[in-house]
View 1: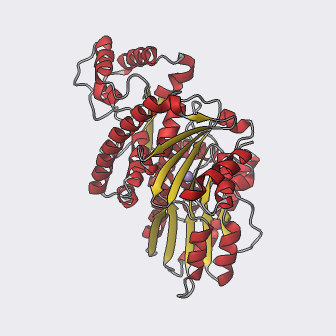
View 2: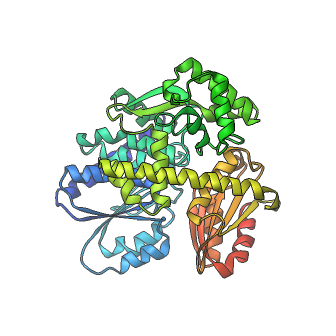
View 3: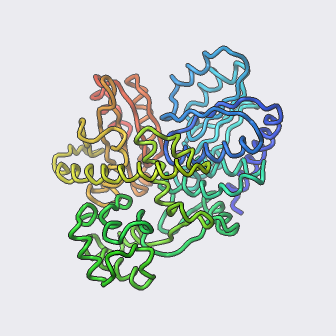
Length: 462
Ligand SMILES: [Mn+2]
């Protein structure tokens, strides 16, 4: 075992012992989690552990708390509390220590965003970065949480699939599969028979829609010249000669491969670049056939966040069937909206401002702030914008606030670019808040300070 992984496991064990002891007192636990597929799944795994142990809890789904949110929590004055920060908190550790921990509250931070070490005994903090791993590749919040609670209670083990959903949601599945802690949990999920894997087209709607419709709706991946283009989709399916009523899942591997070849030829992108984007392992929940493949479920959870209903995604993860169906409906709306957003992007791609440091996409009100980050990811992945520099999107979040999202590639981060750090520092300089990973990040800044923000951002994108 790699030394980083054994160090991580050891720390996870320490935190599990601490938590187990605390749970005996049945405290009410306040969970703050990031409202995205990873944050929702991580909170679901944590909540499963509390639930089977009869420990009461409250969950708040938020955009990651900045220093301001944490200072507000610190002002609460109703006795000793137990705060758990999931999928956030690393950059704010000094604030958490000063504003919350020093007042006698219990604190647990389970995160995978970059952040400094803690030399405060008693402040429980697990983060793969501390062991020298990359939290944008090797572990998400869901795998971090699972790694702790599996050591506390056997009865959480059926939720191991959610660790993979979180990793997929955070784009931590690569052509070679999962790595680091994600890979360990992937193996466990398969060995335990919770998840099954088969090879095929990595399209979200491969089970429940006819093949042509599945191609037309495809937003993750986004298929240039095919997604949103019904005649192209029908043509592709006819070329392969399959009945139009069959889903891709029903085609059989040979026909599916033929369809993949025809699709790639149509995309106009060199095959070597795009094959792994559309073809590879497809993951299923073995015992729950009514659940879609895990890739689709990850995007469905993101959709529940986009439409401000993360609790629906959470309830579905906890086994609520009505919530599962509602979440899948939200996904349909999300796919339709994302196809429209990509059309907007294609119409406007020539007008994006390009500096030596980045490409700027000003969406105004044309693309909602909550959908912009995903649009940028898809634009980079599908080569609709060149991946030669980071892409920065600006959207109107509210009357007085702008949301700014940044995306890069691992090639760019290998050259020293760190989007999350640049976002965090530029936001701080103008009285806003921001953060994220090296490859992706976001900030909220006062509208009248956007130009200043960009000036500082450009300096930090060095
Ligand atoms: Mn995450």
